[in-house]
Image (cartoon, rainbow, N blue to C red; front, side, top):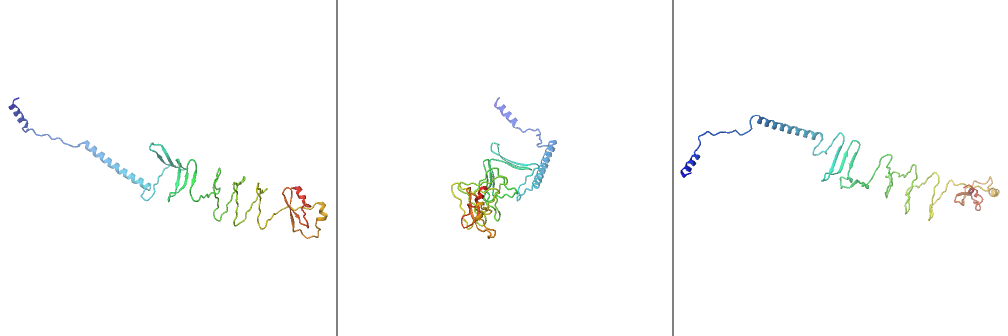
Length: 270
């Protein structure tokens, strides 16, 4: 191609075209536009219904800033706790018949100070309240032993330890002390009352010691004629305390000398 031909071809390409330009419409028209408006309207209606349902649920549940959160169910309400691996670590189920907690350790703390009021795990149950009060008519029933350093009744109330069908045993390696600071101490039984000291002694210390309902010995036939009082003798008011060989105590009418030997026939029936 010569230089003149190149220049001529270049000039012809740079000349403006005389044809009319063609315009293409840009946008969504027709049924596409109507479908778009329909979906936008449907989305707006869905948002309004969703907002109305949310407001209705909050109103039914009484959920406000100042009131507590209320969860209701026809059967039960279950709250689960899981770790980062998705394993169940704790569960609280509130049902119509019971409230069940599934966890390694269950604690109830005070609102002020965070003091542990009640805690339970696999090994033990700890009650940390200052006072444990059982108001049931049958009291508290324990299947095994109960360890406590102090048992005390409420003010102006009596403390009663009772075993209705079996025996009541009080044992202590360093001694058992029963003290009534402002009242009487009574021990009553149906059959026999034993006071036994294997190595020490039984010490009775009081201004007056009384032994009631002791049997009164009678004089033997050999000494009745010489020792028995006559019918006109005054009533016997003084007695001598006697002891049988087996330790039984009895009374014998006092005389000028000891009368235990003459009235010792009561020891034969003991």
